Length: 258
Image (tube, rainbow, N blue to C red; front, side, top):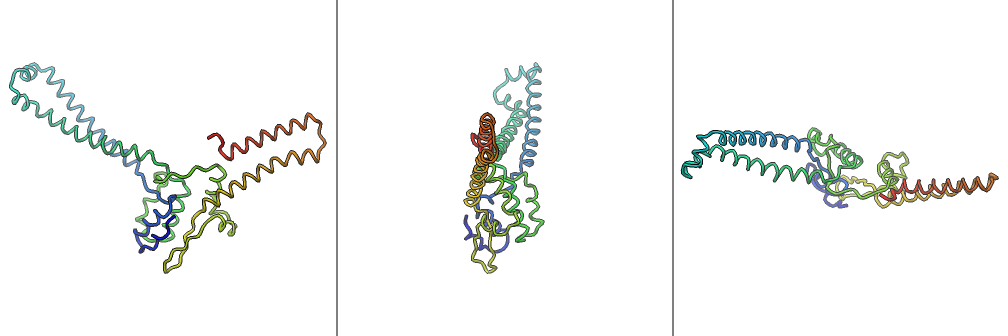
């Protein structure tokens, strides 16, 4: 996390610095529908040229005068007769280079980026609205979270850690929020602080919750055996049931095997 660049003047320079101060905030619009629209436009143009070229090929092949002339006349005259077809082929060459060389390959690379997690987009959007560094009309592009991509893939987390990460900023206990985020104060005249979720603390808290739940599951059968008189068969059944419950719960919470 780099907070030194946040001392930029208000405007897009500070916005750019904020987006690059943390990997989670390095999010941008992919404009996937527009890529698809341009690809479709190029596809229609190429298909039209393909149809036109095919029509010329068929007409040349079925027209005896044209086919005989192409066989018997000189090379210069044949090239003049082929000028229309040459023009179509050159146009196809340009369109195919634009279609495959730039658009299609770039769109494939765009699809390989990870979608932006909802929490990351929400944090950035709230920052935009709160700081008001630029006119809100210039932030309309932020209102399509489903079209955002993250340049840096989010680290792998288990379900419990993801739950804590998604909800750390909504829990009402103020001291608990302070524990789960870090404060980095930039040296600016306003003295504002910037809050970021602490990945290390959230990871430790999630692991602590899993350990507490595992201990609770293990203690329940012990308490049952101490407080309730059971036959050996029932004791074995209860112990086996809680073993399966314990292993299943841990596998589910820690994404074991994935």
